[in-house]
Image 1 (cartoon, one colour):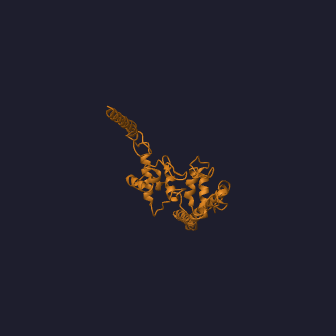
Image 2 (cartoon, rainbow, N blue to C red):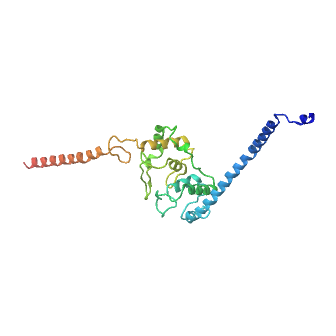
Image 3 (tube, rainbow, N blue to C red):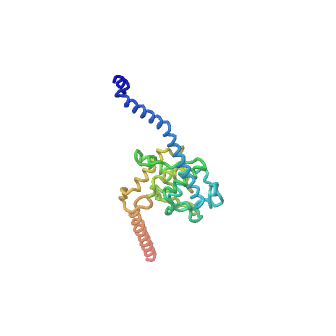
Length: 269
């Protein structure tokens, strides 16, 4: 009986063994889980690039070359970045229906997943602007007044004071910004599509872009009012001006005819 008592385990022994096992398991997870996650991310990225290359070969290579190096029908895409692809394809401008002075916006033919895959492939060709996250183009924390100043200084000469758009030379035009996804506006400032110059962080900071997007959302939003009546491209109310122009000019012509008639009659008499 004494020998059995001596061999009996301490009541806390099982608890100590359990805690030790948990510690070892946690250490192993901490050591290997990040590597597994990184490996999974690399695999997912590689798969996206692979699928994007297939989509590129079908819809883009005929103009931009099989490796995105560009041809006589399309510019090189090396170094344009994922943001340029997300903008051009997301707004339906690419693939282009036909060559012309400017490629118009049209209905998008790709899913969001396919756009991400195309962007991943083009980004793999050379470093360029990345797709912005929601925080970068969200109106939260933006200065609308400052955005208006920046827009009028840098953008209004082409897009009009409130982003209604306007005509350029040789059949080109600045498209309206009303109803455009804020993410696409941000990407356009980053990449400079077609006739638009690019505004990197050196010329317009991330906060500046955020302010401009907030300004456009404010002046073109549902809550925006035009108390003067109809407006002409955001320049201001024109219904009163049109009334004054037609009837005022008509009145001046009538007065001029009356004066001329009176003068002629007086000379004859």
